[in-house]
Length: 236
Image (cartoon, rainbow, N blue to C red; front, side, top):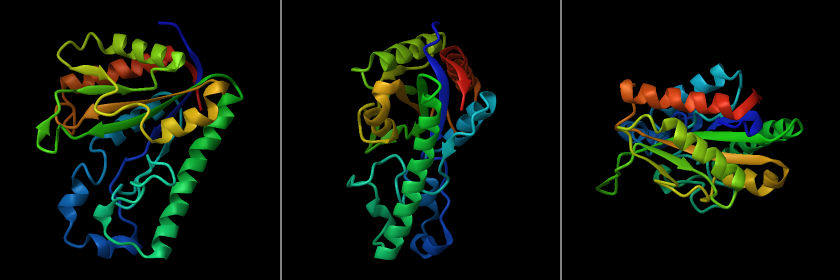
């Protein structure tokens, strides 16, 4: 497997379902909603932490529930403030927007610093619900990227090859979402692709893989870990 990148950056935009104190009244009696896939990406935070420890990368993650603000949306996107949280006061929206800008700035600064040393692979960790709008998703693992980027296509192909021994898993490109949809990878691709940035989102099925880490999950996570080790020289 050819090493394509000098540096690795990891992120986890939907890592938790924490509710800041000022918003607790909004979620009174809504515990189940917070615990659901709408509240956060179940099971993915431990995978993100494992990778950051393994590669010595502090990374950037958010533990605040996505029901308040979606850290994987760009400013101005209509779904930045999910309607499920209910109406927000202007001061509360401004507070959340400052948090969002801080998250983006932290990730941006790490990417810029890494790019000064060479090509960067940014991996954003996510998970998806196995049943959406009444339909079961026949997918265990999704590799999201921009097919027009040769760097990203090569990295995605290498990951597909790395997980191929997990023959019992269904793995597909750009499912259950498109790698070009609005999000952090798309944002930084628009800023830094010409300087050597590549961004992939990894989507793990919450049903077949999480929250219980079984033998299938371990094989997949180990394959992703091996892929990252082969792809990059250093972490940032």
